[in-house]
Length: 116
Image (cartoon, rainbow, N blue to C red; front, side):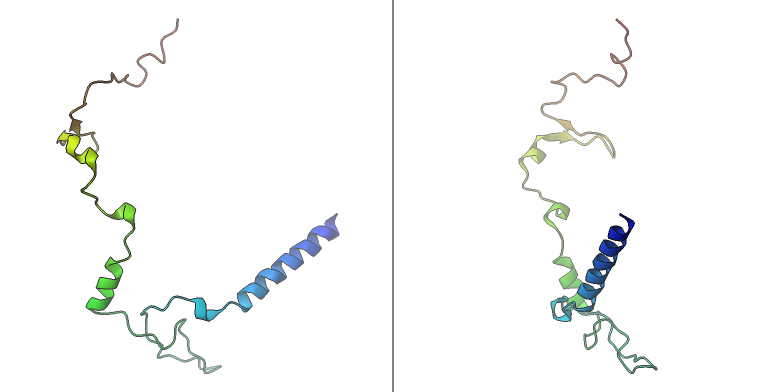
């Protein structure tokens, strides 16, 4: 039983190492990064992960970063529930709406600790 675990672990680790070694660098996203000016003194290879990319500065970088917001992060003002809000009650509190106080709310522990 121990030998099977060792064999399966070795095969799994080998498959993982092989998949990392054969990864396709062409599938990496093309983006501006830090320019690759440095080279390794031992092998002479580039020390950056993305050699040949332009430096990430300027208005183009800022405009590109603004386009990566998700739908959840965007403040959607066309939501129909926003029209129901009558008064903001401050940070951390529910706003006053047109249907406020139609459903009674039990405070925590009001009936849960009552013994019949």
